[in-house]
Length: 360
Length: 154
Image 1 (cartoon, rainbow over the protein chains, first blue to last red):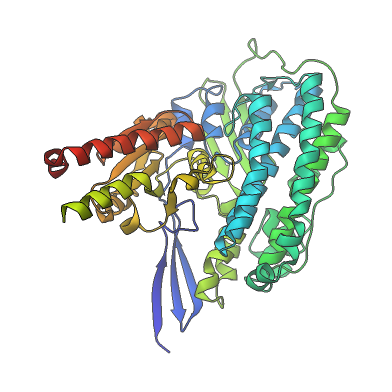
Image 2 (spheres, chains in turn red, green; image 1 turned 60 degrees about the vertical axis):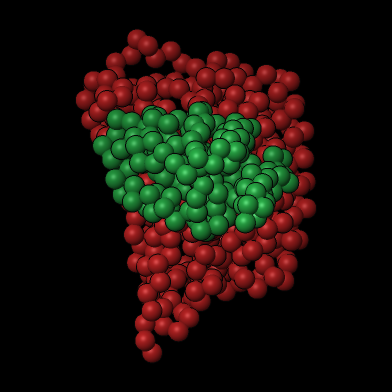
């Protein structure tokens, strides 16, 4: 049979971001996929040369607009370790709350885009309708919808008042109820199952060998979540990773669906245990960061890793960011062979690609 | 012929179709553009549809900075769109390079590559601002229709 080469992307209706896959097909099945990256590379890591370590918070927030809070959280944790800053416990809890708000937002966004990728447009609209409530929560508690910019070195910029906490709890009830209402459609609908069950299977062995992270690894049965390392306040909150074993697109969407609900629970518990006190430690008199460190946190898409090297000057010597999508591209290339061309958008989206993270 | 032209021009400004291209942005602007299409803001009720095909589009929404790699993709997309066309640059990065302007792989704002009609500031701009930007652009398009000589030049 003759081979056909079909370009997928960089501008494609289901992809919000430019990624180019060169697909080699025999008949209608993919035999090989070669990724072609670099369309949104900005060279952001080297901005550390011109911005000082306080200003870099704003830069790392813009690595990715969908999980900006978590990027800034990771960066601040690393700098705080180098400068030996003690973050007040209330700030730790507030960081967890806003990180989880971001996780729900990101998962709802993905569930919507995923529904859109197999042509279920009304489900896309429903998920994004719920997501707008989360955006309201972001806006009223932090002041911004997308790039929340609450992290500073030594804590957070804003505090939650008692009134806001009460309001947040009622809003979360609404969000949880609305997400649960979509469970039947997302998880049990015939058409959804037809497009997702058994598509793009990744076995646990493959996931382990190829270094899959986040929901891709957890969908294949690997119980691996960086939040288990109990950074920030996760150690004080009861937390269990969400794991599914099938390893197909359906399992990955199930993981994200259940994680969104688990995050609602996490926020509730964090609000319940929220300690009183300061939200920001004083860091003005301290010396700039010196030494090396590595920081890991759990992004909605998986494990995020930051490497810092400071020499006691205002600018960091080196900042290295490894994002979850970068780790999930080899598993994607393992999923694609054998898949029909019409299923390629569904399988590609099932890893939740965030290209602006990957290419920075 | 004149009547057909008038009809097409009327329909173009009453139901503009959008093409969205992420040109090195951080996703912040992109998700706000998508949020415009969803139930809370719902621009589809005004006949605005997000299409994936540049041959069908009237308005090009570009978010983010231009870099050396996607410069060509962006100009290709713009060339494939039928005339008259609008270019709306979204976000601080699309205006000037924003926070990334000093990075080594950044060319700068969209205006370095394409003629931009409307600039929407903000990092990221709120969905209301994006809708306002597109409406301003459509008014410009309408003015172009009313002055046929200007349209020829454009």
